[in-house]
Image (cartoon, rainbow, N blue to C red; front, side):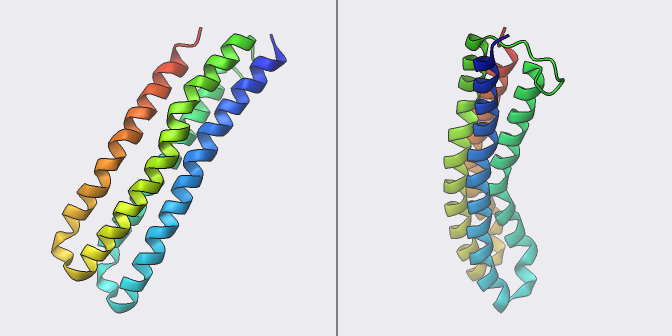
Length: 156
């Protein structure tokens, strides 16, 4: 067992949770602020706008999932970690795809959703197109989630 291995693993889990969490928090906030102006004029658009606001929040969930998986796979969550320095570095590397892609896709998805709020404000019948445009950004967050999971599960 190496203290450095545990430290690197914990750093990976922290990055996986913190960076996408920051992006999601900021993103959900931006969309919510924009949607509030529309809702002040027409509260009936709430459900259409809520979907747009939720979308940038998923990256934070993905990062949290990876952090928990990493802590569980490494044995830290079970209380008996046996992690070499090399394994710790591998866990840290495994966290990087979701950490960074999650951060940036949440922010970019929020920008797309904010534009969608403007579309829904003018023509609520176009909300599906706005959601679809915003959801396309999600594809890259999902791909980075899968890469991080595959890497975590293959640390030996």
